[in-house]
Amino acid sequence: MLNNISPVLRFMVFYINEFSKVIGRNNDVGYKVLLENGVLDYLEDCYEPLHTQGRLYVLTDIIEMLISKGYFPENSTPFDIIPEYVSLQTAEG
Image (tube, rainbow, N blue to C red; front, side):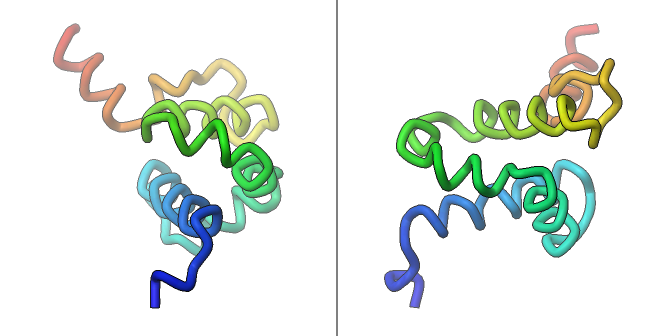
């Protein structure tokens, strides 16, 4: 079944799921946020360069887009939002 899904769609679904985990909501909410803010179009249009990057790089890109669009407070950074970064800051500080 998964073999019939395009790599681009698989990539987009992966990041819907990953973003939903970051915000602590279900995939329906994550999908809606990404759709309404143009992130899904961005993931599709920029698939070629993005799919070669690591998970945290792409999530950082998504969070930065959403900060610029007002979804997160403008004084936020990806380091405040993505759990792996928050864990690193806590361990260091």
